[in-house]
Length: 190
Length: 407
Image (cartoon, rainbow over all chains, first blue to last red; front, side):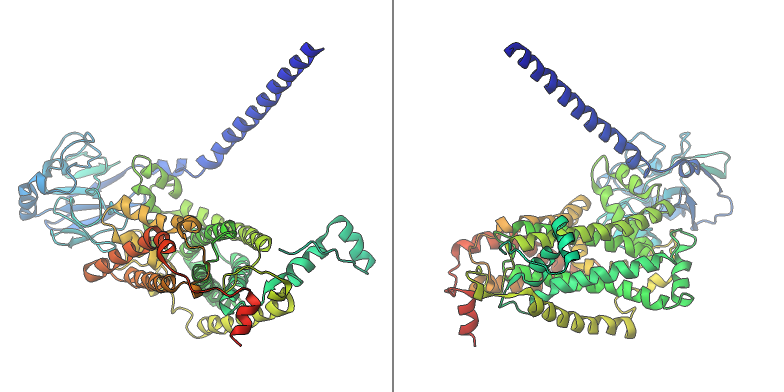
């Protein structure tokens, strides 16, 4: 009698725990579709690349285009800007990483690394960067700030001629999107 | 608090229902006969005012949804359609927009009343903590609602606030893209904010129900901060406090409707009359006035993650207040030092509000930093120490004695 009871109890314990576990794991798994539906959907992911013709851009002129719903700054830099950006010692930078999607994640933030495309081509005249302040996502203003680069009016971040953060609360240099030259004057972003 | 009085109902229908669901006796005991301290002052009416504002927001919100379109290409125009074409649309929209501000005014006064009279102390800790959750849920609701008209400030407010989550290392970017449903604030963001802005007020209503339930278990605190000792310390809730609350609600509505009818855009930002433009950030982004103190704390810290953590901590710390304040005396009426520091704390919060409305540079940045330091020092240093060094004034023996000694 006593053996039967012990057996019953352990059988029941097992069934209770097994049922409870399947219920809990099942509920947890069922949560995933509810969470994942909020991630970027297929139509958003499909809008991946944009072409841009650099030829009409005059020296000292910058334009803002839209890629993946985000502003992208393309600037034809002046000789003076390029010279100043190149002369800036790396030690003076707040963020020493290039933040260039076309380069390894630890590439240093030299001016050359800021204008390198996905094929390794360097064209220091044209700077292509995502126009979103790395602090809280505002769009910085061009030709402004203490370093004659970009200035974010929201919380006062100053970026230099190569889009590198120099002063203010932003933690990172402006991001460089993945892009490559498809001819001497044409790029494709994304 | 209230003993389980058994009520006899004469009406046979009422009695039949009562036997199956004791709803009539519950209403009698909790909303009519509920023994309420006789010394409550007008600062106690702001709970009822806040609850009324929640009802106003839900009612006006439900009818606004009948005319609003949550889509990036139509949201702005549909709000203008409400303003110009819908019968009384202008009134409903301004009642809702200004209602948010006046809901916050009522809740802020309600919170500071709780702070001054020690309403968070034992046995009201859970009551207080549910209140903090209401405050946080309210802030989320207000933020998402402000995004819906899809003006410039709506859009850029959404950008800045969602980007707060990018401050978290490693997973930050993933969280933000998950919140957006894309690579920037866009249509998926607007639609989910609309869905949640409709849901959260009902969550708020449920939390308010729990808040009132917890209140009815332990009973009201009162301006003298002493426990109710006998029946003569109390008055029945109805008609004494139903009418007092109603009077206060009417006076409050006078001011609220004054704004709605005579200066409905005073508390907003004119830049929100321009449709959202993802390529151009307005020169000066400021949240609505009720978020300015928190915004000032966010910007006071020169580090992105640090700023975000400090801002969220300024809310979370309120949950621990019942254990941070070591004084046994509830009401600041009997705390000579507590009273001084309370008013310094009020000034600090107002200062943070002003600092939050100014560009984050120069003297205002320094002011915001000092005020942020004092905000946290009040909870983490001053309140814990004060209870140990302060000599409270003598307390009256009962609420009745306290009331009679003043008349």
